[in-house]
Length: 175
Image 1 (cartoon, rainbow, N blue to C red):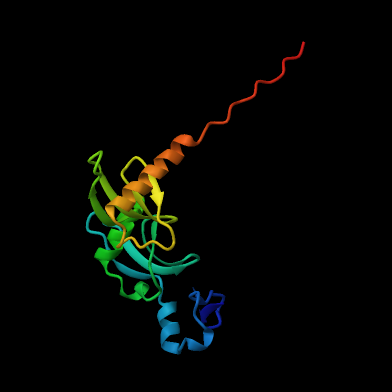
Image 2 (cartoon, rainbow, N blue to C red):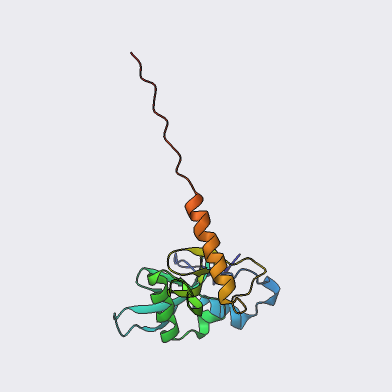
């Protein structure tokens, strides 16, 4: 479903907007519909690049955009409340790879390398920069101890080493 303003008389297309996922048609009043039709909205101009930063609702949900770089917003209300600083930081984070640091655990007891819990594409994971280990669904990133993290990283490193490359078969030679 989508929202439409007017009938599009005089050969002009009427203003249309996507309907937010998870919302019921009955729950949207006229004021909210007009607010959705006002999208995309100009959040501001990025001081570093001079490009406009825009917030809107797209195919994959709410977003902010600067040039050709899009970054997702957490919920639909953020489209109307996001400020320029937050929008630019989301876009910069997206350009860097999008892995946010959830928690710093400190230096690895054996190697001295920093152990961190990051938020990745497939959920939170713990890393020391060389090996990554996903946190199980029942694990909480805030309650993970250094000992548990080190054990998970060591197990991930063992699994990584045990993966063997498939050997190529030599083709038969014909005479």
